[in-house]
Length: 429
Image (cartoon, rainbow, N blue to C red; front, side):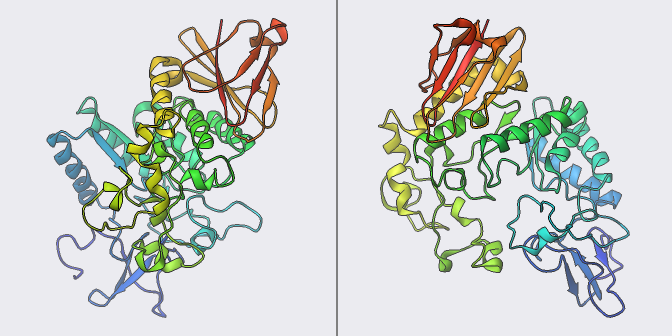
């Protein structure tokens, strides 16, 4: 409320320019300037998100320590860890330099819609500052005082895979982190190969956390599978992500194959959607309640919930899928159990394998075990000759819920046939 109280600099304040405008060109992800004027202090405060979410000044030692003390409070209560929102946003450039524009033809920032002017800047000075690494080391030192606890950081950045690697390498910062590369619209086998290859090139001992859906993006069953089989496609997509090197986050409703919900304008709650409507409807379509039964309010609540349940979700309820042996829910349980049974999928190294342009294939290897994983993410039957290095000793593993045929008539040129939306897991002798 003034410039003289004990915590006057615990948030990011700056004087206006001589003409009264904000200190620089930084933008809020939720629309407009990242600066809001306060008439009492005659200064602007920084908010990368809502005006009601002023940014803490992590350059201030006491404010920084207060964050760690807050975490210690919860660790003492016995929490298992923290999911850290926008973990690369903590520090800002103290010189408050303007961000440069994105050069014409270059890729924009992942994690924000193209219609948002936020994506028109290269975010050089308002996030992912080098000082953040030292704070993450302090944070990890605190976590290490509480064995068995963990952290997962969300990263929205111009170079998310680079940040993921930087923030999880060395065992002295985050335990794991996720970005928006697989939460984006592209989803071809070639695109996924490129994401894996790029992360592997940067990774070293870094540890990613992969996800296909979360509370910020259109559900994968719609974003990736809008033109695919609504039951088979979610299954093979889950098989793929559960086979990558790293940890995996499954978003609520993903195990049911829920499509993006339609939320009418008058029911929108997300401030993001209200600002950018109609080009961007906000994130409420992925945040509607879980349909437990095909009943009023999906049996989620006895009263009308914060967001409405899409009528299309009710037939996909948990109770209905429990009774359907071919449901996405049962397939998810089978895949999770298969992952648990094979340490190579949880801990192994990963190496891309050339099985043609349309198929995705990679090798997982750990402690003398090798597993070849192949995925047909299309609605067309595909086949491939196994790479000669693997063909002679490949054995098709059962218990995955998928159908694939391995023609072993010529062992050295074994050919794998993958029907639409199918995966194959082969043990290699």
